[in-house]
Structure formats: C-alpha cells, structure tokens
Amino acid sequence: METSEKNAPPRDKRLRFDDPRLDAYWEKCAELNMPVNIHIADHPSAWKAQDANQERTADFQTFALYGKDVPSYEELLAVRERLLAKHPKTKFIFCHFSNQGNDTAALGKMLDRFPNMYVDVSARDYEIGRQPRTMKKFLEKYKGRVMYGTDMGSDKQMYLDWWRLLETGDEYMKGRIWWPYYGLELSQPVLRSIYRDAALKVLNFK
Picture (cartoon, rainbow, N blue to C red):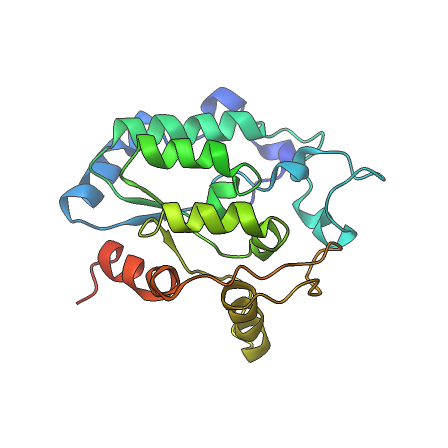
C-alpha cells in the first residue's frame, strides 16, 4: 500500500516490521511453522541522487528514495536485525538477497547469526552477474539458505536468462543494467538447492 509523503504519519508513528503490535502475528507464524516472505529496504543506490554517478540506469528511477521522507537504508536493515532477534523461531525469507547482495560479507554475517533467516535471488541478477566469483562462493557456502525467486513475470526468455547466468560459464552477457553479466557455472548440488531443495524445506512442501 502506498502512502503519499504529504499524508504519511510521523516517522515514530509508522508501523515497522519489529513493532510490538506485530509480535503476536510473527509468533503465530512460528507456531504454525509458516515462513514469512519480506521485502526489506531496496538496493542502496535508491537513496543516491539520480545524477551521473548513479549506479543504476534511468529505468530504475521509479525506485528513487533520495530526499524523500523515508527511513534510511541503514535504518531498515537495523529493523531487520531486531525482527530476527525478537522472533528466532519464525522463519523469514528476505527477497532480493535482503537487498544486501551488494555486500555479501555483511549478508553472510547475518545468515551466520540468525539461522531463521533465508533469502531469495529474485530480480537480483545484476548483483549475481557482476561479481561471479564472490557470489559463487557465497551461494556454495550458504546452500540451503538461498532459494530461487522472481518478480520479473513468467516469460520464457526470463527463465532462460536465469539458467544461463547460474548454470553456464558464459561471459560478457547483456543484462538488464548497463554492466555485463558473467555466468557462475554452479555445481549441480548448489543448483538443486536453489531451484528446489531449499524451498521444499522452508515452505514445508511434501
């Protein structure tokens, strides 16, 4: 639900994921063993000015938060940390690599600290494709904590592009953003975990 800045309540009155009013809800999810999918923050470039130094192309200006009355990137990640700490029995799946795919070292520390935290790869092909060696090591290390996801429609070519990115060693591939992508050539066990096994475990599929 969108709220215009003009009509938005004061910052300290807004409902955040770690708000005590939501505690009973998260605890019921834990009781039912029902995982929760959450979108936290956005790519950190969303808080940067839309100038010549902007990391992403103009297509992403709809996500621009620079100068708006919104929490900072750091504030939102702090909310995530408090949420995970308050509800250790609730499984949380943070989409888009929890919008921290730009810093896999920091994201890895969160996964190490909170075993109830999971992430998906949805719409973060550009984070994967521009750091193939780093991301390959990350996906191998956190096998079972990362699952496939997409909010990019269901066009066949979209899936083919993902498979090429994750499964082949192709180089200098055209991507959605202005930098090229490089394939990860992941092993079969890692691919099986991302595509299937992690979801079967976390989503309670039989």
